[in-house]
Amino acid sequence: MYRDRNDRVSGDDVESNQISAGLTWPLAKKWTLRAQTDVTLGDEDEAYPGQTVVGLDWDVLPEVTLRFAQRFFHDDDVTPDSLTSVDALVNYDLTDNTHLTGSYSILGANNGMSGQGALGLNHRINIAPGLRADLGFQRIFGDSISSITGGNQFVQPYAVGQSAASLGLVSGTTYTMGLEYTDNPDFQASARFEHRDSDDGDNTVVTASAAGKLSSALTTLVRIEHANFANFTNDDVTNRLNSSTSARLGLAYRNPHSDKFNGLLSYEYAINPSSTPDDLLVGAGSDSIQEHTLAMEGIYAPSWRWEFYGKYALRSTNADLDSLNVTSSNAIHLGQLRATHRFAYRWDVTGEVRYITQPETNYDEVGFALEAGYYMTPELRLGVGNRFASITDRSLGGTGYRSDDGPYNGKTLKVN
Image (cartoon, rainbow, N blue to C red; front, side, top):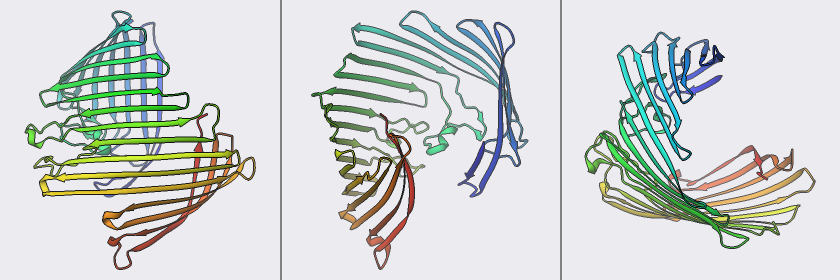
């Protein structure tokens, strides 16, 4: 494994090389030895230190496994330098429709011993042919705030990008209930409710979706999602993130007897699709964002040599920033046209133009591309081309204009 990592905290570029080797060896009928080592060649990477893990699995029963494991870190600067764990794993079918899962782990490191576990129960109810309900329960006991290769996990209100690895589990209970209908090949629907409750906060997630054929050539899809805050360490209600809701509606046209024209129409309405806290110390505020997105696209192929593609999309955004006493609205338009001519069995040439504008900010961008493609297989295409783009924006200084050109390459895989 070769890694070239840019550390945005220290600003350093870190390169590391590791060789990983693993072994699984059945010692006896109920005993299995597992081992793995990650050997670093050269300097250690603090995020991915070298380590060796040795474990022993004992199948007490067909449904119960005890696991003893010891983890050693090769880097002396990593704290703790080793971890000891004992795990009890349960995976048992109580009935054909009821499944029990459980685990309990004891972790030992420099700061002593800690225990954590989980118990889950899932039950399926067959209400009618093609209609079933799923009920689930899981209890997590013992906070799972443990050591990882990059440091120690901790309870935190926000985690962005790869920092989510530092999130730990806290004790709590999860309840789920789902309903699914799949009996009709032309119509399928599902709904799910999930609630999580713990001493550090609670949140609820509700989803519902349905898909069906209005005709042999027309298919529709609708999906609704709602989730409230999941924000540990902020007990004050006014400091929690706002709930988010989204509703999507899609309509697709494809004639099963002719593939000359295919069309897609989609609409999405979202409330607080992405919440950004005003201040990590003060709280999330009471801002509200609403978005409407409408998009339509189509592909027309009169013959195997020619293909024409077009797309238009509009996004309208209304933001009420109570913390700043600001209300704003804007719209973004996107247009795209593409034409492809296949002048040989394996070769084609493509021309494309894209235009995006935001009238409220006097922003315009137009881009052209000319590309040649080669089909390695009927489904796999390799392309190389050159783009020509220009941007007009009042924030670019005196000229308000800049251009950006350059070559590119890409590949396209068609799922047949």
